[in-house]
Image 1 (cartoon, rainbow, N blue to C red):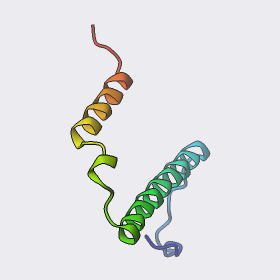
Image 2: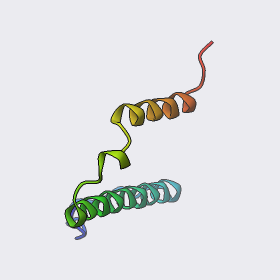
Image 3: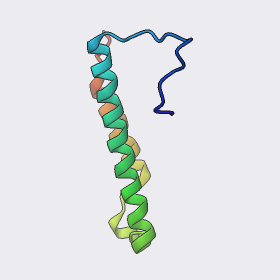
Length: 77
């Protein structure tokens, strides 16, 4: 994305302050996630892959994630 302002001939619609704050919060969360992912990749590049004993099988990660998603979703009667 460019950080340059839009050309003057195309007026931009301003966001409500709450919407702009929410968008900034989402951008910060996304940036933090990207930084964490980059740090993991840099660690792997520097030190190699972790041993199998130090890893969690993907099936366990998947099940834990699905359980978190199910807990967030309201129960349907």
